[in-house]
Image (tube, rainbow, N blue to C red):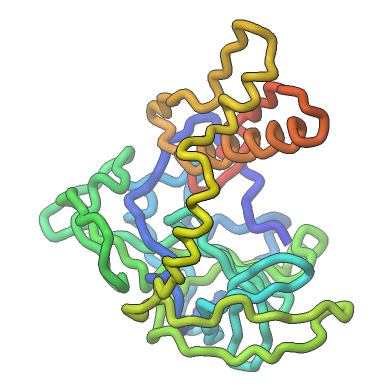
Length: 315
């Protein structure tokens, strides 16, 4: 089930003024779903492509999902990490007991997949009284955030926006193999109702007989969340080199004079899509390391960040 829309943009305006962390978003949510829309493609749900700050500020979720036509679904987005099908995932449980998964999309949106239905929505942001937002505004223009949890974060420096980590703007839901069923998609928005409620996950056979293992069911907001064995860490650190750089290690095996610009700083300009730059650079380096380990050869794999931004409703 693909949630990213297929409308591609030729002009990218970049990030929007959102910044939420997983610990802020986890908790009990109510998803208010509109009826299925038979348009032969994903409905716009009030968005423009690419999304801009000005367009998102004009969205009225109650017009996009009228109260008279909506249906509610309560979903607990937990902080429990489970291993399913060989992958670590954050557990989501709906009011009917169905289990699924959820994830953050950068720091601006979330995606939930549960009971054969997918939900994707960006978080809500609004202007402070007397302030007027404009296209191109981003995290640097956020003055405050609502619904955040835990300390240790850098204070916001802006003076224009409130970022709401306990509410979404309008988003999309799809059911089953949506591309094959034009009527199985629609719009929704979400509101967080309360804090995380711990979910007990039994150790035992999962899908196809695979063991369903709880990897981490701690309350990550507890003050003692970093209860590490520092003695063990220090013992291991004595055997590690003081400095190691995969890039420099591989260049030792490259022809003399080889220059690798992979980790040089890039100017994003008006794009602002740091998630695409970071993800593609990290993936390219993983490919290089894998090739070097297997073949002892330096291969300058380079991936384009444009593929990750061209068809994203976030850019």
